[in-house]
Image (cartoon, rainbow, N blue to C red; front, side, top):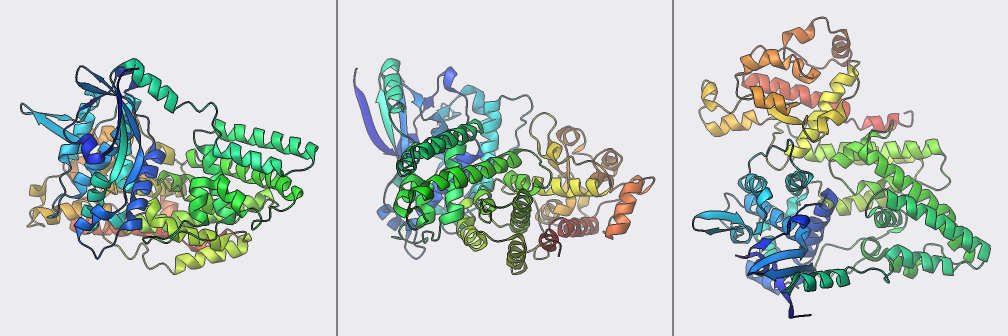
Length: 609
């Protein structure tokens, strides 16, 4: 093997003015929202452990360095080809673009452009240089929409992961903390760059580093520990068979489902403390389970009741069997509507991964099936209300922002019966200060477009279901050719509204309010988006029921809708024109609809109160 170089580099050293190419057979970008969220949570969590708001920025240089992995480069003809690590490099580039956009209009900007793009002979190109990504990356870089119709899965992933970044980036890093975080990311976060000077050498390194043939996974090490403590040979064989069957089903459900199940289960039933967000704080149960659950369980075995051989057998045969089955149910409910468990899907659509441990927390292995389902409905409904309230008030629901409060809820609802569970969670919601009424000016902006899309889908779907039509929620949130988009009722033509607005900024603020928005097919937006309201109105009458409710004909020969209007008392009305007052009235309608959909008293109704 020829010369091989390995060097730890900061993000700045790795990306500033350096071009990376990717061979055609490795160009697929495959990360999903889970990996993006884990990257953001990992980086933000490590930064916030050290961050002190009362010190100057140069003190960030004293923060500990943090290592996030390695990349393998094959250097050929002066070009850097990424053999391993392109997923991470691409995701870091997307994060840098987000940080660039978050800094706009700030006076304390940190220059990140040189880590994203470079220019030669007047031609700009991205430092992760892949031809087929260029137009998509350009749209992301400039903050412009990008048409995903008929695009490859790789490009769809690329664009959607940027939307995920906008959604999950912690609110607590967006204020005065932002330049500190960017400094830390560029100067204190390291990757090891391993450089070989032939493809053969590069792939030999890759295969060696990724050879897991002899290494045991955390779950395999945990199994070995548990089985070794079962004295009865027949029971040990039985427990091993049970373990094998359950692990196979978890692995069939998807990558990382196995380890995520153990983390959610053990946190939900055993975590009693969580690490404080301050410098020098030590990891507690919650944190250790997230990073080394197999070691944590071995250390905590006596405190959680694993003392005799029978305890270890029961832990596998009863507990693991029960909670792994429930976890698989939650995974399934996160991907498709299941009657009675729809709120799990809605929460998953927001990207809220903390819900699994909360849903498992009140469950007990001896719960009857109807009790399990009732508990799942109560907790998922609670989360649906809480998350929507936060989003309605421009609050973050990112993992790092919600982790501590959700830990407290999880700990407090552990093992509760349905009645106690419903009362407990209803009381938490009653104490919340930010509800729908606390923000009557909800508007769409770059960072909440994804979540507002989901809220509009729920409003639209509710109106149709209550009017006797089938649910179309999955149609409204699906990606691809026939996807729906957030439509502004007013076209972006402030000159048409000079009778009501002296300044373009005032027009834009009103135009972006939720009362001026609909959810419509992309093809509709492409065809009619630029027209006046009066010209669009007849076309709205051909769309979903919430859009149709703008048109007078919606209130004729429409018995299901008219019955719903009368029974609910909601302020639906036709709008022949659409002025400031119409946006305000329509906004109030949406707010009243939201209060019907996300009503804390519904938790008590789950238990017949």
